[in-house]
Length: 208
Image (cartoon, rainbow, N blue to C red; front, side, top):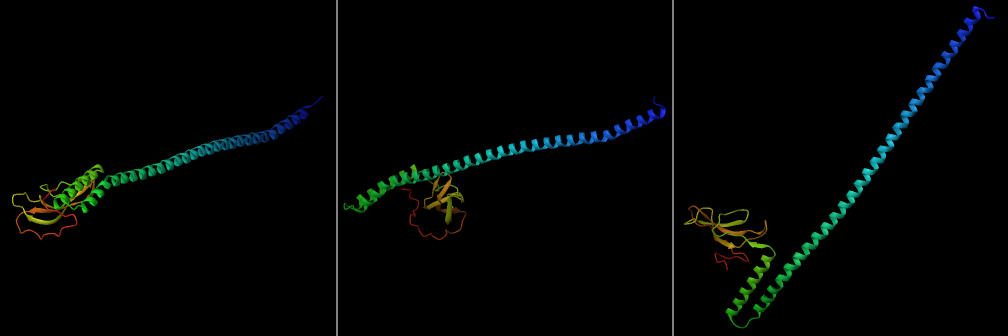
């Protein structure tokens, strides 16, 4: 039969064993929680890396498609330039033919002039088909974007700032200036400026 002292001793040993087991169990639970968290982070990192790889692959495909498109566009543009130049050249071949014939004419001055007139018409038609237009100048307000002033003349009946004479016709292709019209501009009073030297294709008021 156990006495009171024996019961107190057994109770103390039991409490000591529970106290020793408690911290060990808590430590094991903490380690398990940390491992689970690390595993979750690794899984999330792997998912982000996979997503980044997909985006990188998509970017590479888009870049390759753009490079192919750019190369195709450059080739098509070059072919269009070549086709346009070839068409213009073909249009001018008949002009060359007529110039050669005009140079060989032996039937007098009038026949030569008619040959030159025919050549001029064909040349203007060829340029028009290529989109080349003559710049309107005579009697128009002077526009430095399309006209080049070579001389000033008294206005007379013209409004100041008006193109009074065309020395050399100007031409444009769409909105692109090929050559400005070289002109004389009417000014209020004062003597006329010096007469400019004619260019290789210079002309006066005559439009023909």
